[in-house]
Image (cartoon, rainbow, N blue to C red):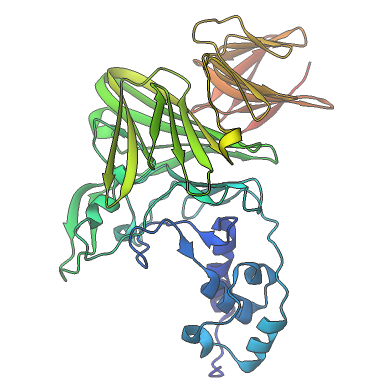
Length: 443
């Protein structure tokens, strides 16, 4: 407007501020709460309509218009020309086509299966910035999830001058895994101005180990060093079955005894010792089911009206939480009356828990997997040492493996869904596969 010639990088960076909102947005046209969002304390999402109206006027992007309010806010009106205002009025909104995606520079990984109000969305936090660590929270490998019009696993906006700022910036108001009740953020520091704004002396350094996405299933695995001083390795796997649910596996590995916990946000009722449920105002809800070892404790509490659930295991050296997150649309589609959690059918997927029987099969595949999921030509195996199919045996070395097998027209694809590199052996031929990478099986 002032006729000042800027470098092309300026337009690129400014446009990127709007592009990222498209990538992370929920199907209901708002955005998740990431780090120090301070507009509405304790709110579980960000309204972006006014912001995207500005972006629509500046760049005439139909996808921005999909999220925008009907008018350009008076706060932004002076930033645009009359010509841009007229362009905004004529611009037709277009629903985004982007599906699961990633922001690797900032460490955000987004899983989605569509843009309708009943579709599912999750964002995983796996980055620690060097430039502005003061705005980051104790939520390494933490997740937020949306389904059926609700934030089923929320995060919350904060306000700097509130006494609960440090609490709402730390792990007990996140969806994370912790050790010995020690949160990720350590040693709170206020700022010199006394406004309440502050940061942690120490936050975990995350590391993304694998990322895989396709139209049917997504996979993320990462670790962080937050409990290295306690002698504990931590890993989190997130598997998104795009038919309608997630599987989250939290691994803790140590030479010493520790208590290991999972923290989930929301208000829950207890169906039994491994199954809890949350229900939202529109009748939709979330089932949380522990598919592995049954937790020793289940504790609930609240803060500022926000609820949380904490699963706990007694002291042990190694523990794996294997947690089914199943959002349901209404009363009829909830999971209920299960007498045998070792054999479930969820959205057409057969889920077999082999804790007590190592001789089960998935379709035509024999395996010793502790947990397996199967639907049509997709097979998921967890904690297995062999797979037998097409009269061939696939041995998995370097410990137990987690993998996806998918039947294709020209054979099979195997994908490492585990926390570490595996070696598969077929007819004495060895192949190494890192997490999130695939390999074409040939015989």
